[in-house]
Length: 183
Image (spheres, rainbow, N blue to C red):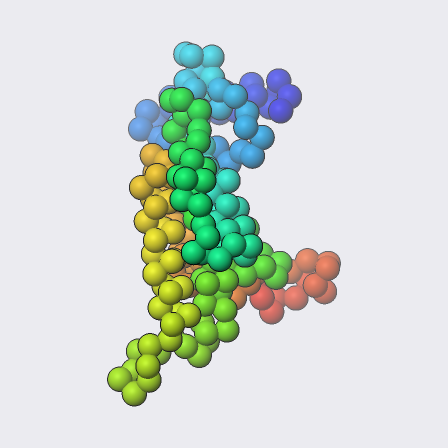
């Protein structure tokens, strides 16, 4: 980030706090910019929180590549708690990024095609093992992320409550189609 950009963010945070001292600013940053969440008085940029953007990528990678019985809990715990001293973060399991342009939401990875046919709760039908396990993992992932993932938790309602479909906004690459531009 160049010095003009940093100065702008510092001034924006100062202005926001001067207008409303209770305002909270959250940085969406993947660069690992030092001092992003340190106060202006400490020589920082002044954000209150940083999004823990590694978390959703870690969960999707685990779900896609590793059977859940082989998940390394030490790695998960370390990944969820690995952050700079005194830097507050907002944890989350999944965002719109995982469902844009053809990838699957977390629930779709966990339930696969059973998200359409196996979600019934009927006395006439036996429990669907894939759905039951997927629901349990979905709950566990959200719980551990909420507990270890930071000083706050961000919930993307469409994804984390089982929205099955991927999202693709109108763009040149899809002929400016609105077909998958919905929640």
